[in-house]
Image: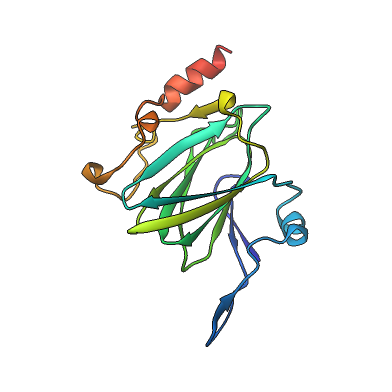
Length: 185
């Protein structure tokens, strides 16, 4: 596995070693020993999978401490633009984001440590998306950031009229609102 560092400390793109021949391909999607040696110790406890159609934007979601989650995300089939925004207090890159195209063809994975909010947009007709989490889902600690925050100005690469959101994802605070509320707690 090749580790590609991003401009934001802790956010890593992982490129597996792919073996291809006339039969197809093979790669190790996760190897704990290699992951720990190259990324660090993370104990994943939950695997999730979602299927979505073109235009869906999911996010930007996170869980607050002590239920924060690190995630290792990848696409099985299709293509997404995967986005992680730094919400770590005191981080020099607080409020900055990294966007990575993940697909069933490129086999890239994105490691998102605790302290980030995460989301993705579906760029293909359909996508099957998988992710590992190092903490269990805890609905009472859910938080989210507005996908369309003008200060972030994320280009989700989907025309606005084609974007499909859950009702819940239509009503999240901006980074400024979220920062203000975090400072008052």
